[in-house]
Image 1 (tube, rainbow, N blue to C red):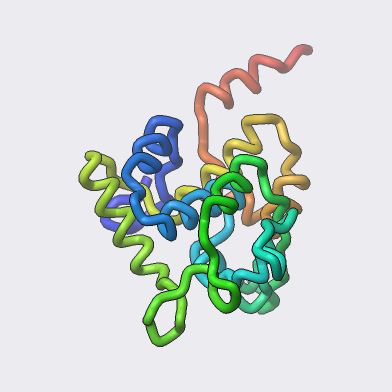
Image 2: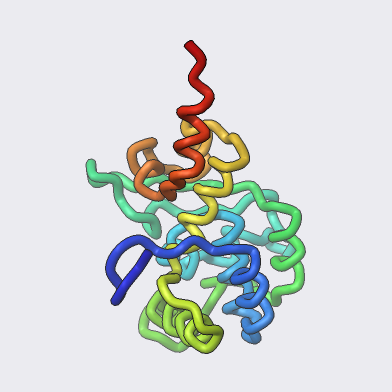
Amino acid sequence: MKNNRKGQAALWTPTVIKKMRSRLNSPMQRLIFEISLFTGERMGAIVQLKSKDVYDSSGKVLGYITFAANTRKSSKHGKANTRQVIVHPDLKFHLERYSPPSEGYLFPTNSSDGYIQCRAVDKYWRKILTDLGYSGFSTHSSRRWVINELRKAGVAMVTISEVMGMNIQTVRHYLDHDPIEAAKAIALLNV
């Protein structure tokens, strides 16, 4: 778990997610949170989404969200890929309730870049979590949570890798170590 902003981000729990949702009063911050939960994408790519990456020209939610390569982190080989994620029905509900700009960034601000900054999202979330008495969480908690939830549901590592747009080694880095699950795995061996 993160300690002093070092280490891996804590995993969301249903209780923490519910409490976060109840405190996210800003429609922009709420949608950023929901996109992070239903895509597991890095915050840097989420805040740089453009309306056209999520909505058609009439404002209707597309069937997928497109995270452009130039907004995503490069691999160790220096290449970033565009990632498309199917819109989950629960996320679609939140996207339909949001009033997106007709063009430009989905989360516009008056910053020099024109979109909300990761630091602003992190600060907003951290304040809520601190007020709730939680520590160790960050904007990366969603990424870890998505990967671990898919693994717990029995999704194959190769599929998680494809869904997340990362290699298997990177996926493994995000996995939570569960000693009880490890003991159960060993108990399955039958000789």
